[in-house]
Image 1: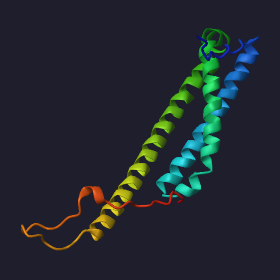
Image 2: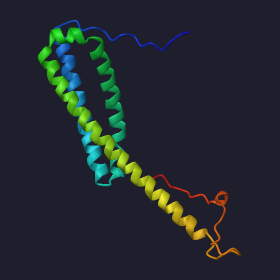
Image 3: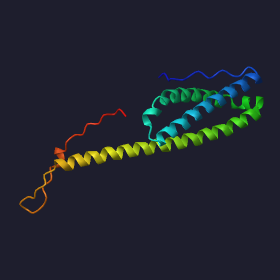
Image 4: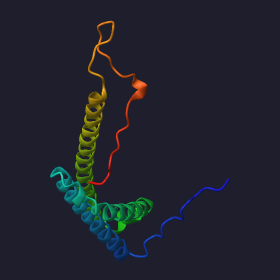
Length: 158
C-alpha cells in the first residue's frame, strides 16, 4: 500500500538562511493577517461582494503559510539554536494571526447564519402565502400536506 508522503523539507544550510526563512514566514503571516482583517471589515460592513476577491489571495497565502509551518516544525531544534530571538518574535506574531483568524471565522459564521435565516424566513413566507386560508369540516384550518411544499429558488450571486 502506497501512501502520499511528502518529502521532508530541506534543512537550513546556515544560521543566515534560517533567519531569512523566519523573516519570510513573518512576511507571509503579516500579509495573511492583513487580508483577514480586510475581509473581516468588509463582511462586518455587509460588503460581501467586495470581500470575494480576497478569497483567492487568502487561499494562496494560507497554503504558503502551511508549507512554511511544516518546514518550521520539521527543523524547530535547528531554528531554536540558530535564531532564538527571531523565533520568539515569530511565535508572538503567530498568536496575533491566530486571533485575527478567530475573529474572521466568527464574522463569517455570523454572516452565514444571517443569510441562512433570511432564506428560511423567505421560504416560510412563500409557503404560508400558498396555504389555503379556509377551515375544514372539523373546524381546523386547512394546511397543505408537508410533502407538497413548494421549492424556493435562490440566486447565489450577491
